[in-house]
Length: 250
Image 1: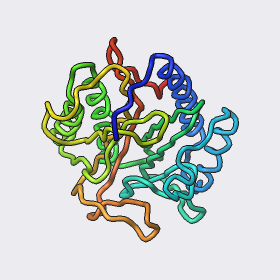
Image 2: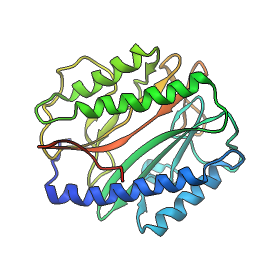
Image 3: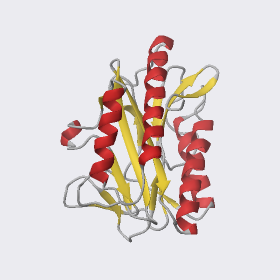
């Protein structure tokens, strides 16, 4: 699949959508607490999307059954909201949300500490978010795609954690997943040269132990094979002549 560059006008539309997605995350942060189910969280997210007049990107995508992904502790990605899945004190909860706005898709994820979590979990969350920003810093015209990948991997491993290999970031625009794939590992100086107008979702998934994964019987949820904790952060980022523009923040 060819890489599709966006015009400044298209990026401006995506920026509008990204601000809305950021506001939805602000709403999520306000209500997220121990004692609620992941199903409860999904229903509130659905309510927020309706309030902002945007469409969910995930529901029905390749058969995914829910409106958002909520992954807890050893779950890496694609946790399916359930009335049986309770968010408890001490959990770390990754929330991944995609929306469609005026024909364009935006994608973002954050991991939250619920109540009294372990020092290891807090460090994992911090390092994962910092690794995302290390990657974003490399998203500049003239750089190579894998410069982003290496910046993420180097920072994560320097801090004693591992990057997931089985799931990667991606181009985004009129489709939720476009070329190119954005790996979170690998040597620098490889892959296509970054051009103005490229929009990508950068999303490190970082674990305390082995980066090997397995998929649960629901066919979607990926978990660590060793039960290690996992954190996930993601922003949609446009490559511009003035450097990386993060679209999914206020």
